[in-house]
Length: 124
Image (cartoon, rainbow, N blue to C red; front, side, top):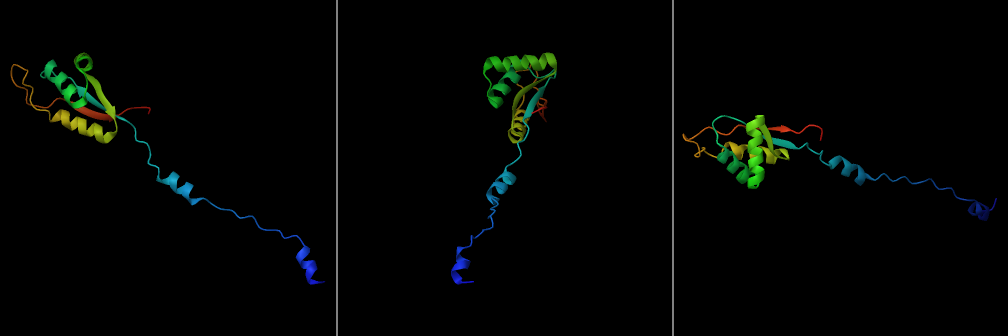
């Protein structure tokens, strides 16, 4: 066998498999989507409509009409979702509502906070 015969034979190369680590790392580093949380105001017999309306306007950014409708819903249903979004902001809104101050619209000042809770919204 001569040297030229070896060179003329076809050369079969092994396939090169490249695993893309970047795609794996990207999918692992994506944060899980958190469920939205609802800020819920509860009814009581002491806080006045004007106070609750003002709280919803100043803390949640609702206009007069929406704040009035939500206040009516709180009164008639016992509770209403007044805001929804990410948990951290829901916690902040809850704390702002609790710390809003006394209801000076009442004939006798109401010094305890408005009832408010947060809970995850179902099915999202």
